[in-house]
Every structure is written in structure tokens, then in C-alpha cells.
Image (tube, rainbow, N blue to C red; front, side):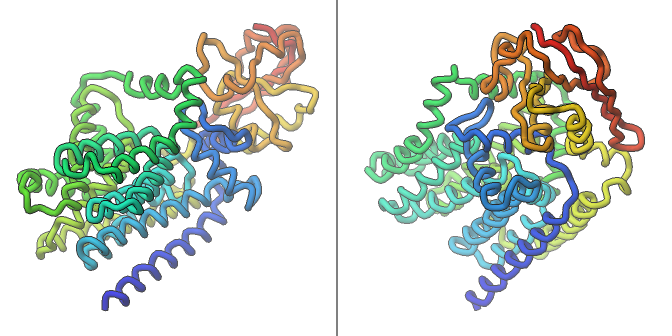
Amino acid sequence: MQNRRFTFALLFILILFFLKTIYLYFLDLPLSYDEAYYWDWSRFLDFGYYNKPPMIAWIIRLGTEILGNTEFAVRFPALIFITLTLFFSYLLIYKYFNEFNAFLLLLTLSFIPILTVYSFIMTIDPPLLFFWVLSLFFFIKYLENPNYKNATFTGIFIGFGLLTKQTMFAFLFLSALYLLILKKELVFKKETFLLFFISLLIYFPNFYWNYTHQFLLIKHTEEHFSRKTLSIYSFLSFLRDSIGVYTPLFLFFLYTGKTYTKEFLRKGSSKSLKFLYFLSFPAVLGFIFLSFFIKLNVNWILPFCLTGFIFFFAYVSFSKKWKILVFTNLILSLILSFLIYLFGYFSDKFPEPFQVLLEKFKGWKILAERVERHYNEKLALVTDRRDIAAVLSFYVKGHPEVYVIQFSKYPENQYHLWRNANTLIGKEVLVIKKGFLAPSYLEKFEKVEEITIKITKKRYKNYSLWKGIFKL
């Protein structure tokens, strides 16, 4: 019976993956400027980049080497990572807790709105979730059986997570803290030292890159937490958005986390369950508290929420009341996911406020076509915005290397590290500018073209192209 249920779950995952692949292949949605930015990184492989570790660039490079420089090639790895995340989340509950709960978790995660979106958009988060869940899986194996094999695999996947996004440091810190508080007998084992040594050794190339680049990654992370506020509105906005992208399951998790807090301190409680709780509930509570003071993005809590959902399905004994709530939430998730699928293909049929959500994806192909009319290889392409540079690098034929002007003392994006616009002083360039005002960094210039691109019925993007002699 167990094998049949496992086979059914595996078949469900494969069918869902196949259907999503077809959907993605025919999806007519240009890359967002962030996706194009990461793709541009993949052309110049390194151990670090301005605001992120290198893993996403390596992954995209692998995809484009196999499938070519296409939108599908950039995004397909996201679908693979989300699918594998679903599988290992299911496997964790199936192996250590309850097979019925495992399948409920699989169904629920398959249609959570944020995971549906991340199946089709390549960001840092899909690979992070994959390495996070694998680290969870093998760390729990290590707690059950602290041998060198489990320590090695855990260290490897934590290390890969560190090379993906700085959020993975929270996993490293919380897992070490968990051992110090609740598993002191493991703290000084050679296997534990090996686990943390391997993870930090894998991360070291990115640390060294940051060291040689004045720790730009830390400065960028500090900027995220400098958006200070003190407002009940920012808290309510964060809570609303969290419930929206994670569904009311987010509230179920918070409720069960609060309920489990007393049980957490008991000696007889499952160490696997304790670890899942430790890596989810306190962190999410901390972010909720921070939301009163700092403007937060809901995706920042994604790995902690995923761990929390795994904890929820591991902990809850499904009474009739819980079954009604979970299945109602599943129906809601199905409806929301279905709307997301429709939105990708028929966004113009949705109300204006929803269409605006795709603004960062729209208009780039038209802009690139207009630039191609005036561009030749003798002219350097120059802009003062990294979003414009990224999308033109991808969509203009030949994939030119675009210059981004640095006005501040310190670099503000990867283009400032790659190319110094000062080397163009005195040369004729083609400038792409947002808006229609003349650029202050050109002399003897002429306006080549004004470009207005319709995004929705009420919203437009305005750009202008200029030729002239570059100055600063």
C-alpha cells in the first residue's frame, strides 16, 4: 500500500511537471529585467556578483548552453527546481512522519500561488528552496543518524544554498543554534565539524570574491533593511500579502506553531519535528515583528514558510475540523493557481490593477527593435539604468555589452563592476534613456527617436534614443 501511494505521488509530480513544461514553452511573456540581468551575469561566469552569490548565473548558463539563449532556456531551470522542491518536501514527511499528511502537503504546495509563479519565473528563490529543502532533509537524517555520510551531504547542500542566496546563512546559524541548545551531545562530534566545514568551504570562493570587492553583497543587504518605517500599515500590508501569496495556510501554520511552543520544551518530543519548528516559527515571528519597522518583501520569508508548512503537515493530526480547513484551503489554492495560469496567457483580459503586475516584463522587445534600427557595432550602447541595460543585452541582436553610467562614488550594480563608462569619453555613443529629456552627459547630440510603449490601457513606458559625444 505504501509503495502504491508513493508511486501515485510520483506520478502526480511528473504529470504536473509535464503540463507546466508545455505551459512554459508556449508562454509569450518577455523576460523581466531581473531575469535578463541574471542572464547577463551568466555570460561572464564568476564566483560572485554585485548583489548575489553566483549560483543563479551558473544555472542559467547551463540552461542556455543546452537550450540556447531563449526565454524558455532561462526559465526552465526554475520549473525543475520547484518540482524537485515539491518532491523532497513530500519525501521528508513521507519518510519521517505520515504518508497521508505527506500527500496532503504535496497537493497543497503544488498550488500555493507563490510556488506556481516561481515555476515560470527565474529568480534566486527556486534554487534556494531546492537546496534549503535538501539541507532540511539531510540535516534531519543527520539528527537521526549522525554519521559522516549524512554530515557530508548536509554540508554540501548547505554550501550550495550559501552560493545561491544569503538567506541560507539563517539555516546555518539556526541549525548550529539548535545543536547548541537541544543536541549538545552532537556539538563536538567530528561529524558535526565536518558538516559545517564542508558548507563553509564550498562558500569560500564567494566570500573571497566579496573580500576582493569591498563586501558589496553586505552593503547591498544592509540597503534592504534600511527602508525604515514605524507603521501599523506596513505590518498589515505584510500580513495581507503573506496570506495572499501563501494562502490562509500561513495562518494555520502560525496557530499550530503557537500551540506547539510548550511541547517544544518537552524531552519526549520528536527531534525532527523540533528542528522543523525551530527553523520556521521563530523566524517568521521575527519577520512579522520587523514588519512594523521595516518594509519587507513577502518572498524573504519563503524558505521559513516552506519549512513551516512542512512542520504543519508533520505535526497536525487531521481531525474533521482540520480536514475541512485544509481541503477548503486547497480549493482556494487551486482557484488562485488557475487564475495565475490564465493571467500568464490572457493578462489583457484582467482588470487594470492586475495588468500592472506584469509591467516589469512588458515593452522590452519593442524597445530592443527600435534600438536595432539605429545601432551598429561601432557605437557603444549607453544608459543610466541597469534594467534597460539588462533587457537590451538579451533582446538586441548580437547581445551587445551595454554600458551603465555610474554617478555615485560606489558601484550600484554589476555593470559598474564590468565596464567603466569613462572610457567612452570623447566617443560617439547611442544613449537609451527613460523619458524624453535630453541627457546631460552628451554633447553635440541629436534626438534619434522617441518611443512610447503601451503597457496597459492607462499606462505607458516612454523612452528616447540619442546620438552624441559622451562626456561626464
